[in-house]
Length: 232
Ligand code: SAH
Image (cartoon, rainbow, N blue to C red; front, side, top):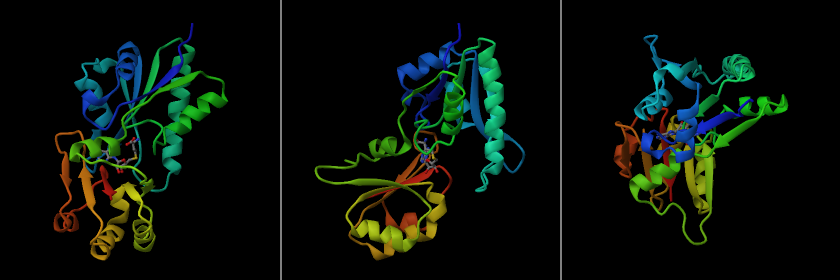
């Protein structure tokens, strides 16, 4: 009998923010594929693997795959293709295979590429839902993220100051993911829009968690990869 390949959403970083369903899948898994990145000193870093270890799941199941951080995704697709082949053959041997992603695995999560590829090739897949980072950020700051008639838009940090300014003027609540890509746009809009509240978050749910809505402090920050903003 073969088990569906399961994509488990790990939540934003705090191990307690995984769902019971996701945890159960991890406990049953024989192989858990985990994304990792290589730092400048050639060390492999994996927040995902750290979450899994903190949940008391044996390291022996964990297999790291290294994702290049470059904007050019060509190399990343190659890594995903290799991962696809490896996971498919483990599945073929009857192994219980899990692939993890941080936050929710279907929310700005390029791993969905492999999920689709399994489906195209008629390999059964399933996915557990997870808490996305911006929802955990809202809880951290005690924000009522959207209320009453308000509308929310979630955008990646690939926009200009003008585009961001237009959205603020239009009255949307705005979540900016991948904030490190739009430092200038954010700084400009903080100057242009005294009426808006800018909530800045980094490393939510980890020991390095940080939150501020102080404009000056935000202006002085270098936005790391794991940072996001909610504008209200
Ligand atoms: N699947 C994830 C999003 C992945 S895209 C989710 O559901 O949240 C990567 C972006 O998510 C980062 O650039 C950052 O903007 C945001 N992010 C992910 N985890 C975060 C965290 N713990 N703290 C702050 N931002 C985070």
